[in-house]
View (cartoon, rainbow, N blue to C red):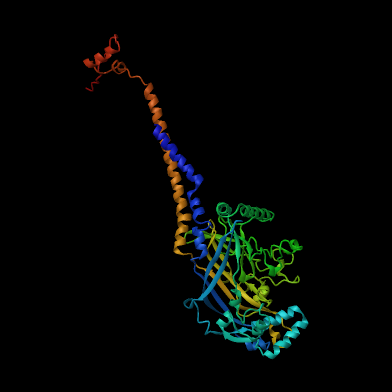
Amino acid sequence: VVKLCCLGVLFLTLAYAIIVIDPTEVIVEDKLSMYEGSYLNRLWKKPPLEVFISIYVFNVTNPEAFMRGEERLRVQELGPYVYQEFLEHRNSTFNPNGTLSFVPVRRQVFVPERSVGDPKEDRIMIPNIALLGVSSAAYRMSTFAAFAVAAALKPLGMAPILNITTHDLLWGYDDPLVRIASTLLPDIIHFQKLGVLDRMFDDGFDTVTINLPQSVRNQNRNAGNDIADDDISDHLTESLQEEYYHDMTSRLKVEEPIRDYSIDVWNGSPGLAHWGYVAKDHWDADKRNTPCNTLQGSYDGSVFPRNISKTEVFKVYRKAFCRTLPIAFEREGEVDGIKAYWFSIKENAFESSVDDPHTSCYCKNNRCLPKGLGDLSPCWYNIPVAVSLPHYYKGDPSLSQAIDGLSPNKEKHDAVIIMQPQLGIPMKANIRVQISLLTNVSFNSELRPFHNTVIPLIWAEMSLEKLTPELILLLNLLFGIAPYLQTGCICILALLGASLIATAALILLCSTEAATFEYDPRKSIRYSTVNMIPYPLRKELEKYGETEIIRREPLLVENSA
């Protein structure tokens, strides 16, 4: 009985321990947290993911009629021209203040089998980006500057619409204006060819620092203290600790909490200087620094926090976008049998207002672009270029109606990131953005048909089609099979424990009743229906001192005759 009770208690204790410890969560926390040498860290350094960039270009089909002012600009979408992007996170360093610094390096390789043709052979008609861009930029400055630029450009004899290859549009073509600018201003214009993708993916070598989860911060801090005790002086150890606590204290003053894996600083700055962000010790910092130009709290898109809720709104930053893009929960579903959340770009992602601190910095001189357009000019050497969703989806309807050949469509043109909520990694993604040229050239008679026109140049789809089989298997094990196995083990152990304890209690109860029962042979003999008493039984009765005459009852036999 004691053994059964002990065994039952042991099973119940094991069931309770599994509930409290949650072994599945322990495994996820150990293997899929960002610390040096972890599984997630190895995947993150060189992601084994197939990321493709599909490029669609807008070919002008009526250049002569448009330039004569007879027709609206008509474009034809050509593509896709597909490139595969390879990402590496180099020089990763775990800092004492609980952050991780690294340098993202991207490269693109053309994939001919996924493309409609050879971009070096396919020719298109495209507006002259350099000519229209510089002219429009001058128009923004002043009327005098606009006329001066027009006079300077006229001797160059540049055509307003060019016949070039798709490759030249994407990766750069020889342009006399760009060549002159790079000669006169080599520190600013450090390139001699102007290409849309060449400018988009000219990330350079940026140092990004992200915040680590609290558990990883504590682990790295303890490890750092151990190393300090062994290898460096006590004075340096104390300074590192003071720096850590000073940084943590200053962060607590920020209204928003530190979010796991969010950007802390980009090239040493927590904000975007080209949108007006200044150092925190600047005399006008409280007024000039807004959520619009602050980068802290946004994400680079490679990893998100764990246990994502449906109310989350993430700001995603990539240098090619020149700004952060907010994404919000759209719906829940499954990918490869794994639970997933769909996040899409918010309806007002490309909407600017001087009264909204989240978008006010995008309005220059209190003038904002129409809904659906995001200004890229600070990242394009002040050439008036804008970013939007393809075909101006979710934008002002007048944008798509002004150009023939555009047809916004949610399925084709929306931007979506599908994430595994417990782990916080993208499972699939389709980020779609369009690059357009904003033209204001009324002072130039040769370019007047382009005046006050938003001209679509290209749109790109950056897609993560699926995870590797290894990652899919891991996710299925951790979030598909393991929870059911764990729940099954808990139920079996609890049932066994309760059954063993109940069995022991029943045995104990029966044993108690048996111990109180007294056997008396006379009770079974006195009223026996047997007419004779065997001798051995008589001897047994004598032991009890029986003196009473035993009454014999005759066996009653019913005569059926």
